[in-house]
Image (cartoon, rainbow, N blue to C red; front, side, top):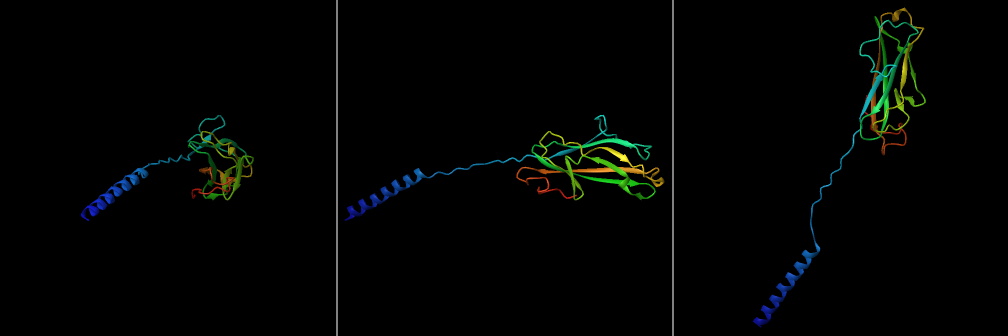
Length: 181
């Protein structure tokens, strides 16, 4: 009887070893490290004069009503991804008091840009390394400016914004994620 118990115990141990070996044969563990790198959305606001030179840092002086000044404004995509673009334009006229800016006229390109909600939206997707069509190329000082505009300071402030266009709306107006002004 002892022999039968010892034989049964040996058989049980043998089957355990076979089962464990088979189990080890069909299982495996490992670790994988997946790295996903995102690109960037970056833009540069470009301001040049009529000759393509950077817009002068010094103010233009002695401007009279009816004067037209060349100022070419565009946006360049300096990032890695296609982007939707918009630009905020804030024109301020300051003399002895704050003056009405409606006499400072910008010749906005309405074929490539659309004004909505206080911004000018570029109608196409801007590819990396590419530049938009100019938002405007000239600033005109209306002939209707009165004497209160003498010695006034005119500031055309610009702020450019961009968001990725991939998987972000079919048009610039459907895009989400615009930075808050």
